[in-house]
Image (cartoon, rainbow, N blue to C red; front, side):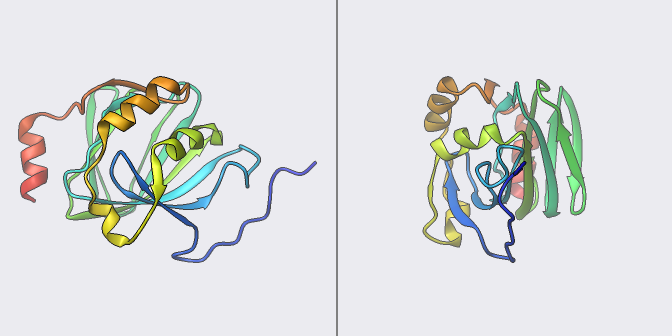
Length: 170
């Protein structure tokens, strides 16, 4: 039984996408390549990038911080996650994050890989490294989420003005 295509990718290799939620993705292993077992991508983001409060009803999400720092809201509790740290949001658990360092380099894993379709629906081919700094398009994100069964947007980012201002000020 074939469980997917063997994958070899070096640093910097992989399809590069600008994500409407903010950030520059490099696809390291697609759902098609893993027979939908998982999707794995790098994400480069800048200070102040935040996600709306959301959950994935059918996927577990793991974010490993390669460089930088995040403030994570996991089911209503705040956690600072720095370089070498990670968070795992099991399916159905509300979560969000805010980038508090100048930049952050993340490795994101979703299992199974069914959530990739949502990310592709709200992404476009990247033009350059500067795409990491492009502002998010939350209207596009909301519209795609309404058509998706792999993500539920529960509300705006759960961070208060003090947290957002502290992240913006550095």
